[in-house]
Every structure is written in C-alpha cells, then in structure tokens.
Length: 85
Ligand SMILES: [Zn+2]
Image 1 (cartoon, protein in one colour):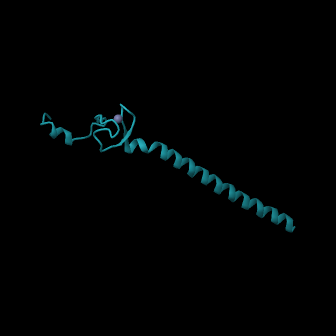
Image 2 (cartoon, rainbow, N blue to C red):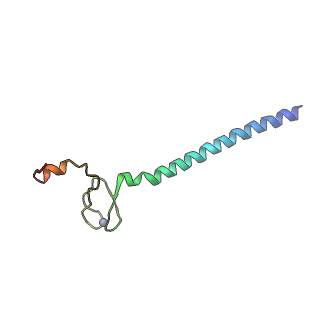
Image 3 (cartoon, rainbow, N blue to C red):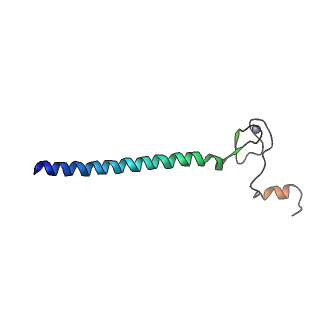
C-alpha cells in the first residue's frame, strides 16, 4: 500500500522534472535561434570584405568601402543631395 503511493509520487515528480527539462530545452533552442537571427538586423555586412558594421555606419570599418543603403528608407539623404524629389 505504502509502496504503491511511493511509486505514484515518484512518477509525478518524474513527470514534473521532464516538463522542466522540456521547457529548458525549448528556451535554449529559442535563445539560440534569436542569437542567430538577430545580428543581421543590427549589423550591416560589408559586401567587399564581409566585416560587420553598425547600421548607422556609412563606410566599412574594415576596408573603408562605402556601404550601400539597401533599405531605401533614409529620407535624410534626399535633402543632402540637393533636392530632386
Ligand atoms: Zn569592408
């Protein structure tokens, strides 16, 4: 009788442990995916040498090559070139 309750208790504890392990593994996978996918959003890769520069950088810190504005949302460059739009 007592032995049966002990077995049930162990099974419940074991089930909780596997749930905790499952959540931990899922959080680890999510954090790894975030770490892999986030840097390209904040860094701009130089097409010439492959060095990662900040999004605000206009020239590469590795080879001083001009970085292209591939997003096309920089409205401040429009007035800098003397109008036209
Ligand atoms: Zn470069």
